[in-house]
Amino acid sequence: MGKSNIPFILFIIIAAIAGFNACKETTAPLPVVEVEPAITQNIEIYSSYVGLIKASRSVEIHARVEGYLERRTFDEGKLIHEGEVLFYINDKQYKAKAERAKALLKRNEAQEAKAKRDLERIEPLYKLNAASQLDLDNATAAYNIAQADVAMSKADLDQAMLELSYTIVRSPLTGYISEAYVDIGSLVGNSNASLLANVVKRDTVLVDFKLTALDYLRSQRRNVHLGEQDSTRSWQPSIEITLADNTPYSERGIVDFASPQVDPETGTFGVRAELPNPNQVLLPGQFTRVKLLIDVVENATVVPRKALIIDKGGAYIFVIRPDSIAEKRFIEIGNEQNNMVVVTRGLSPKEHIVTEGYQKLTQGQKVIPRTHDEEQKILEQRAKELENKEEVK
Image (tube, rainbow, N blue to C red):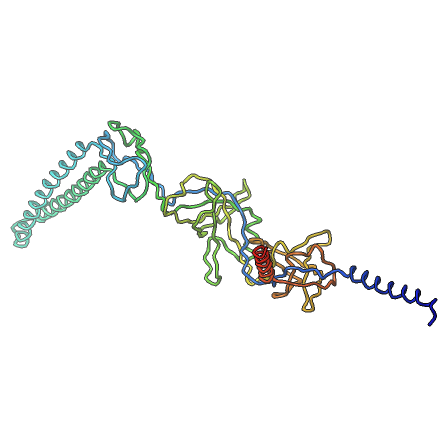
């Protein structure tokens, strides 16, 4: 080999080394993406409405007899119990009426006893022809009239005693009582002021809300009949509500009634749910936001909301095949719950989908898939390495 060929050979070697380094520099590392398997779970479907809280029972306390109000025995706004005395109405006239009815009953009972004795004397005489048929008929009639008078007197006494009992006004249920609507000394009952107070039962409340005819139709298509308990389902239509500060209420209510007809003026029909209220947090008359559970999609395939990409072509995700190749997969989606989206078509359970890092992917690209746990372990390892370096320094 001549000296003139040496520079040429060196040039080729240098060029080859430069080309190798250039290729080495342009070879990009494989992207690392975070993946999760598609899972199945039961998805609850809700609709939202405005509801009105009502007492499960609300009773007006009225004066049932006329008289002057003498005394009140309760503290306004406090808990009272069934049978507890609330008011006393002046009872003098009713006591007098009851005493008169008792006296009249005694007189009529005495007359009945005499009429019976007279009849018992006439009957044997009539059989001996010592008394006429007219005498027997008169004695029998007198006895029957005396019996009727006793029955009327007993009824009058019962009525008088009933009216006397009404002068003591008692609570018909356990609950919280309102303020007194009538002052002591006022004439109450009959044509006068008769409403004395209200008693409200609050340990359970009712929540009324309105559904549109369209919502009703949708529930029927799902074979969900509001207001009816279906033992063939693992769930029942129920509600969740929010408090005045928009925090969720801890108890759920069961839908126990749905109106059988639509209101023609509003195009809605009423629905009611019963809700426990053990701590008296909910007050009748409050408005609240109602979430109605109207369906449950069982064993639905779901993916995290953050894994979903939506553009003009539709919704798609990146699926990582077993050979670590990224596949752009268009899917059909359904309802969403707690940042998990139902996939109705295009994805099978346990397929691995990209949840972080899909922005840098293209169809058919090879990747390095890592689960969230693996990524967490790498970060922890790096943190330990940095701590060790700091200790060495």
